[in-house]
Length: 237
Image 1 (cartoon, rainbow, N blue to C red):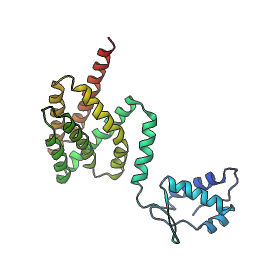
Image 2: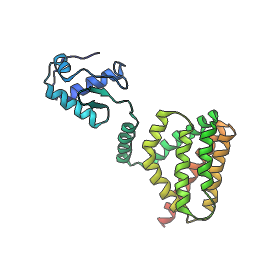
Image 3: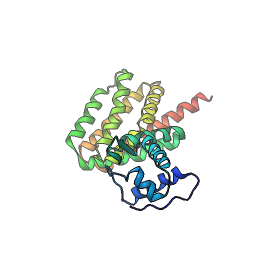
Image 4: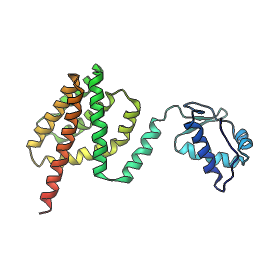
């Protein structure tokens, strides 16, 4: 472990930084038990109240968990924490252009990886949601299927970190998909275009064609973005 005596007015922040430093350096990993309040108080030459304040802040962030009578540990499951913090950060940014760019990068590469892995179970899940879509105008059903299709696409990578990031984006993605589809349905032909685009994405993954899968996702997101731009320009006149 790597701790140093604290010499700052904001003592609990310094303690937090040192705990984070130990995580980055690999001294603490998921499930690691931290020294007790008494031990850290002696190591850092600070009060136990300052230790408790730092522990409480890290518990709120979901980094630490305390077992009564059993000590304080680094959490084993960080997914929930990651998702909540990133979701809030992305919501505060509220930049649609950057959001779409990020989504395009993550989903196009997810499609590439999914096509490389060709996991039968994941493809079956994507196919299930695709088959819930239709060219008939049941927009509530189509929107739900659309959102779940994109989630299943990212799950097909079998990359937990990527899935966590995409799940953190999911609140924004769900909102974007719902609003985008509502606007695009002003032109009935768009329903057919969206249906075909999802079909192309699924087929390229099922056929194990990574480059095609990546391209089909980019074409899909670009299409939606361009159509929405046209609608905005029309509204201005």
